[in-house]
Image 1 (cartoon, helix red, strand yellow):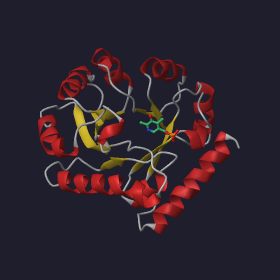
Image 2 (cartoon, protein in one colour):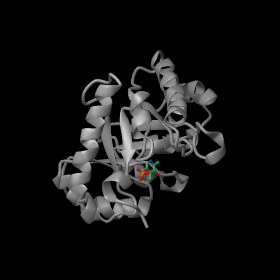
Image 3 (cartoon, protein in one colour):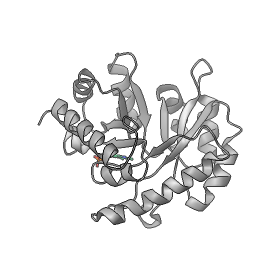
Image 4 (cartoon, helix red, strand yellow):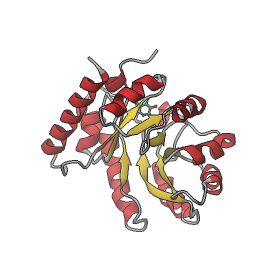
Length: 226
Ligand SMILES: *Cc1c(COP(=O)(O)O)cnc(C)c1O
């Protein structure tokens, strides 16, 4: 299967799942996760109309961003953020999905060039606590969102999570459902929130069923990583 064929299949899949779960057509955006894949793979996806790309490792991402000159590509940072890397992230990316510390948010805000639109950010939620140190607790989300209000160069768009891998569909849905209710609650006082960044190759259908507005798909587009 080529990258182009994979993209076709996944987009058709997303359309079908949207219908099945009464989601508006076109309400789920596909982020192509290109970590550990060469710029040539990204270019192939671009040539097939893909514009949103997710990267985890900063230096690798910058090399690719600098080598790909096409206009209009939207770069999403989805990896862990080291505080000494915030300037590079704020200058080169359009979205950051993994904000989980106020200190990092402040640094991203201060480093975001004022001639650019505010940096779109998602707050990473540690939804299945045992698997990862990344992300804030669900119960800390209200105060975290309120604290972000002072950062004028950040646009608080929503929530991101990467739950522990789970095979069973109903079990996959459960953490996503909790995130969806959290998002609806936060929207009452943070009207810029419109994004739920959940779902990977393994659990895309469950994520869309529970309100994903962005799915982050790597393997199903670009193949297994080394
Ligand atoms: C690698 C990665 C993905 C994509 O995972 P696949 O299983 O390859 O689709 C999505 N989100 C994050 C945060 C990742 O690190």
